[in-house]
Amino acid sequence: MIRIEHLFISPGHNFFGHHGSPAGEHAIVAVEQVECVAGRGLRGDRFLDYKPDYKGQITFFAMEVFEALRTAVGAPDTSPSAVRRNVLTRGVDLNTLIGWEFEVQGVRFLGVEECKPCYWMDGAIGPGAEEWLKGRGGLRAKIVSDGWLRIRSESAE
Image (cartoon, rainbow, N blue to C red; front, top):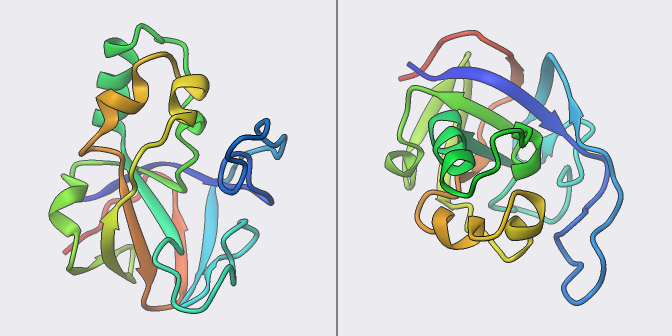
């Protein structure tokens, strides 16, 4: 069962496309629910209609990994929003969903690839975060069907 613990959207990019420049200042907004738009992204998020058939229309990150990361890099007070992923889950190894269609709360997704960490993670979370996250940076996915995701509901196939 996939349990949703946090949902986030952001109107703009803080790190994506900022290589060699300072991070952006767009807030990441915690929401109770979010609308998934098939083939396009999340309503209100920076990647909605980013480009046709974009593989990161939605991103997932495991709370189990986040909790271990905070311990590993000595950053116990870091907020889950620091990873800048849309959906923080519990109860699934996200890497097992790469290449598969799966369903959460009645919405279908296609797991495309690992959401690879970059050097920004060291600044957002703590030194060593990028290296520690290799192979467990989350999941980039395409949205296959329209629908809504809500915090703390359980559902998966």
